[in-house]
Length: 498
Ligand code: ZN
Image 1 (cartoon, rainbow, N blue to C red):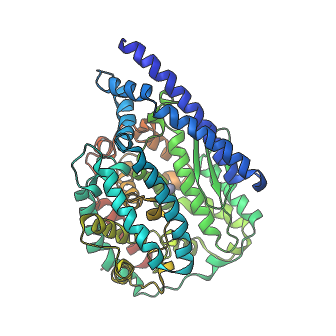
Image 2 (image 1 turned 45 degrees about the vertical axis):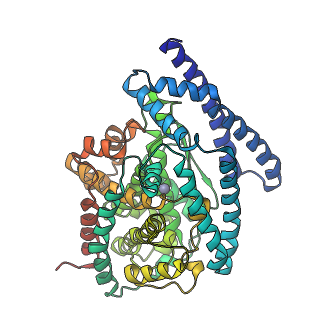
Image 3 (image 1 turned 180 degrees about the vertical axis):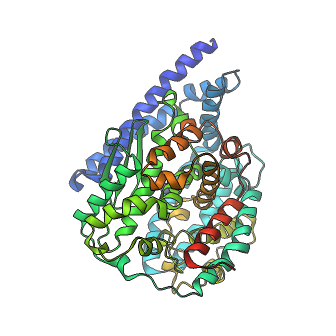
């Protein structure tokens, strides 16, 4: 077979894969937003059938052989990348014996059920044997790969290509040395949480705020949509169709707003990928950390800045009765309030990475053998005490709070903190080229989006994070930008200059 025949064959299969994916994404969006509950069982059955078909295509000997053959060919830059991304995924699973794969799938299903009950009953003991088994099986599954790197390094690489344990070690030790003591200085100031944050804001008023924000962020109705769901998420259908959802909390309305800005950050990333990648793996294979770097740039670095709200706040204030007596300065302090918290997903921007640091250290210990599941809840509590200055009263608010480990997703957590750290590096580079503060103040978010598109978004998954960071910022990942950003921002907000 000639190269061009092979490529034709590849494109034909890839298009079929894209069609199945689009159908499944649509079904998933539908069932998380507007689909009536009663239709769930039939809908799920049909979705499972489509998933099965998709699985058959992507694991067929025909497709696997084709990928192996194409990866040995001399292709152009884009095709080389495309094939490499697909092969990386294939290599993760292809050597696992079927019985082991089936056993592992069953284990994660069981573990998720057990975890949910254990969390509600605050009972680590019942989850402990499952956690142990999950770690053992993860090690076993990794051992089938033709890769000799340490297990945890391979897991990290699954979620964030090219990032090493050494990178993370440097990153988290910087947080430990600089952000932990810095946080404790802020906490010592005993700043009370502003009462207006929990004032009641009716959904009708929040919808008006959403319209104002969408307009400001240039999130267009022609290629986007805002639905409602229990948990906010964004969904990528194609380059010109990226939707988000919002959840309205009537007594915590700023949390609805920032979750939405976050999701629009994800949607804008997918929506600004170069059109030539439509339908290709490159259009939607950005790493977890890269995606979070765009959503957190939107949510925190831009969205929680005073400049962002300069032109927006007067409009918002007109729609929200609860803000009538809240000045812009008070609003900015409120949306950046720092509090010691036990729950990761409720954490503020400053404490958030410390929640991740606890999980990273524990995962690392579990895989290098320095930690065991025995007594791990106590290890967790001690780390919370040491870094965040707060001790969980029970395991439901401690080690059992997140679903990730029950699904076997080890190595995933650190990408959440990495995303924020990347975004500080992007922000520093962007500020060298455009006056971001002025753009925000002048209602010119289009210039920010244009910079992001030209430098980051248009490439989709063409580059590994470190390759793109080097191209755009002149250096590979450097956590110092993030540490400096956090200290500068919160020193200014809370008057902490030495
Ligand atoms: Zn996100």
